[in-house]
Amino acid sequence: MSTVSSPFYDDDHHAYREVVRAFTENEIAPHVHEWDLAGEVPRDLYVKAGAIGLFGDGFQEEYGGHGQRDALMRLVLMEELCMAGSGGVVAALFSNYIGLPPIQRFGSEEMKARVIAPCMSGEKIAALAITEPSGGSDVARIKTTARREGDEFVVNGSKTFITSGMRADFFATAVRTGGEGPAGISMMLIEGDRPGVDRTKLDKMGWLASDTATLYFDDVRVPEENLITEENAGFSAIVNNFNAERIDLAVQSTAFSRVCFDEAVGWARERETFGKRLADHQVIRHKLAEMDRMINASKAWLELLSWRLNQGDNPVAEIAEAKVNATLCFEQCAREAAQILGGASYLRGDTVERLYREVRVQAIGGGSEEIMRDLASRQLGI
Image (cartoon, rainbow, N blue to C red; front, side):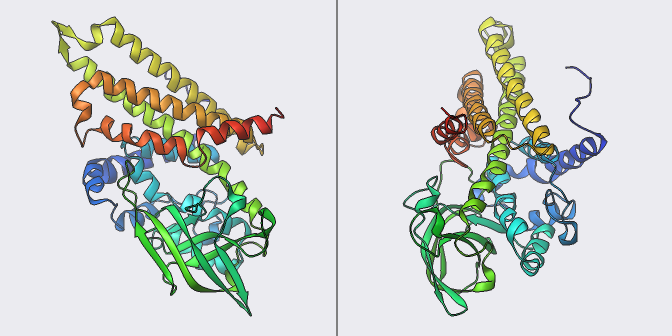
């Protein structure tokens, strides 16, 4: 492995990597199977993460954030947390990073102080509530309504597949305040303890440590100051939030691919068949080399895209394509690692077994592979 430093990272990135790596090794890795069985991570993990600044990227310093977003710092954060081999833990811990950006960008200063500050410290948890039982990626068809009554809105409807839905204190929620289509959508802050908010936990194939829920809003009264965007101006806020989520998922998928590779290499070096190590069989070496090739290509693309984001670029099409590339890489690496580990990868609690189950959600969440291809083609003018 080359020791030449990457041109993308500075001393701050390297120092941050060491902090996150130590946190992952000490606070997460020893417990991932236990948290899978429990179906959640402990609340005090958020406080521990907040204490070392894991939630701060892109949020104002006066509310406990790091200031301007650094996409490469976020890449470092996601990579290192994924080394524990649990997408569920990452999803649970970082719903803030999809729930808070609309508030950071469009919310009032009062709202930011009330919501962002306690989420930065880990005392509170934020979530994004967009997807509905009738559809996910087609945001313009949102059906949850917020009917104005004086200086309040009355919210009725439901959301589903909501990450941190069972425990979130704040929901950045897409609601219909106007007519049909994108022009009638607003973003609204709904506190989890408001009367009329109910939640049902969902049982899933993967991300078992992440609590995921369906939310129900039954005549939930919300004051007008809880509007995040101006009334009927929420569609662009929703769409603009997707880019960061998608590149995060792509980085996670690539990092999980590396975990699968490492697990397969470790097994191939130790396991013997027909009088020699698995790694001494050409067919196994070729599998491993192909996994490494795909991972390196995906990571190089994501580093470049992160650097471009830091320069002010907005490569929507390439981020969509890179997400597809990363999830396909993850699917291939998880499959090949399972083949190399054989029966050992079929036992619950094994890292590869866990990651194999999590492949599908990475390829669907934040926009499915099919939606990403269509988005990229439209951005390219095809």
